[in-house]
Length: 568
Image (cartoon, rainbow, N blue to C red; front, side):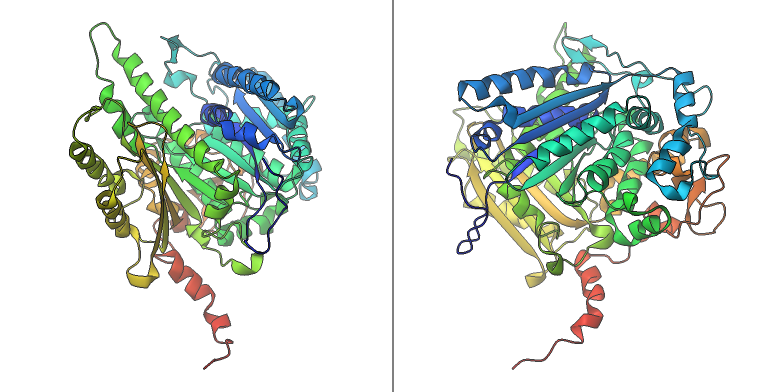
């Protein structure tokens, strides 16, 4: 690959962008797998200025064994091409499960840890209280497998609050293993001689990744990287094929945590109390990845056959869905040597110059929907008339609004759709069907913009569209409403286990304040509490400041517009 200069002023063509990734929990590790399967990453490493850095963190090593195998193959391919292995740094960190007493002892030292990180604490804040209740069951990190597929059980699930505590112990206590790993990750990025972007991937519906990300993200972005590099959150939304405990109440608290990072108005309230380490760590934006359409398309072919256990077939369908979404996302991210990711984040306002950006406030969520439209051997077979193929494709285009994860009636000003198909499958009729379908989400007339592209896919029987929708709020996500109902049905003790962000500060963010009516932030038992000036109704999703992002930005610019000098 020719070593392009950093920026071509005549064409606007930028240099390649190096993609680095942190994967948390099983979902995060699986996404790293997908990047190691793409040839584009090793192509980029042919440039001596480039580096690739990947770090997977999980409780136990079971869900990272496949990643380790892919890493071995990746390094072997580098060697075959004569690319120095030290241009890539791929590491896994398997956290051990402490005994309840070990974790309790560690948590007693948290005030000292936090005091060294935040002078305001003074070493022994009255606001701290341990959040792991006595008698809390500690799951095992061991996994059960059948036919090489994990068969998860609810009693193996790590709730968010427990995963956060285990992360904190590994980051702050003892030899500070995670602190050292994050420092090494950041050094690798600093050694990169090309522009870098960092993906931070986790499952929104899990407990391990979503419990750790709230702390690891701020430790990396605001600490080790000093907010110098765009860090992009990648949250995989659950689908109906996932176990109920992975698509339940913890989704609600996770979305609330992220919302209070992405929305500047909410985030400023938190930063004003607890300091800059709590600034939004997702400086490059946040991508929410729905899986429902891919699940609907893929699990249809996994019919139960005699002699095959139903749970094995079900897990196979979930595994294939995860893999397809991950692979499709990874292929797109590394397209054009990482430049495409930089470009698609610009309309949402995250990769432009500071003077270009007017924040979308609570509408800073971007949907990245891998809408699978065909699958080999399902519904239509090779050799059948092309008209039958196109009828099936058209039907599945029509399902996009139903399964893209957004509520009916959602509107935005900008959508991208990037279709990948064999050259004989896609035509003008299907293109029009796609445009008409997606226009349902667009503001009318010239207020809405749809940008589409078509690329060729190597598989004649697979066709999909990456639909990128900007300007969403958490309350626009169908997963939010469903998870809120599940959360409301929990007992107080069960609700505590679903929390993560701000627990170290003695706050249950998603609960109403006991001190200030109408605000959120209930103190933990034994903590004195804080006044957090964020309306509880906003946490519940009952109110958003404006129905669309364009109305929000118009209001924000109302005063400056008055200063514009009229021109002929």
